[in-house]
Length: 191
Image (cartoon, rainbow, N blue to C red; front, side):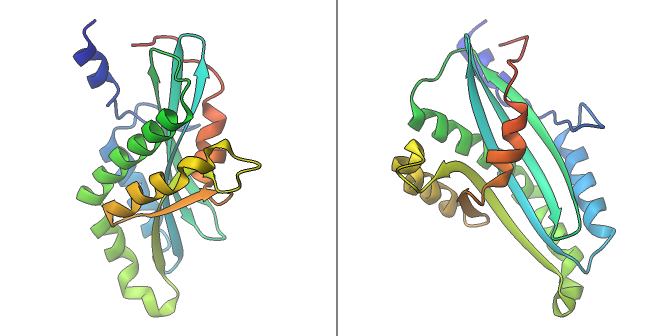
C-alpha cells in the first residue's frame, strides 16, 4: 500500500458510540442538532478532543465529539484511527491529536456551527448558551505532565482557528476521559 493511500485512510470519518456504528459526519451533525433542538433553552458545550495510545506496531487515535447539555446529560460519539507505527515523540503525538481534532472541528465549522447557534439564539436571554471547545490532551503542571512543554504551542494552534476555545487538563474531558477510554485496545486491521 502506498503512503498516499495510507494518509487518505487516516481521514476516515466514520463515528460510533455505544448504541450506533458507522455514523458519517452528516449523521453526527444530525444527532447533535436533534439533541439541541430537544431543549433549545439549555446551555451547551460542544467539545471535540483526541487522545492516542501507542500499541505494538501502531498508534491508535480516538477523536470524541460531545454535545453536553450542561448539568443535564450529553450525546457523544467517537472515531478511531491507527497510524501503522509507534510514535515515540510526545510532541508528535500532541500535534497529531490536535490536528485530528481540528479536522473534525473544521467540518462542523463549515456545515453546522451556524445552525447550532440558530437553535439557541432565540433563547439567549432565558439562559441558552453555546460554547465550543477543542480539548487538548496536555496539562500545564510540569511535575505531573510531561506534555506541559508543548501546551502553549497546541493552544496557539487551536486559537488560530478562531471558532473553538482550547482547553487543557484537567478541563479537557473529551480527550483525557471520553476519547481515552477507547484507546486501550489496538485496532485489528491497521492501514
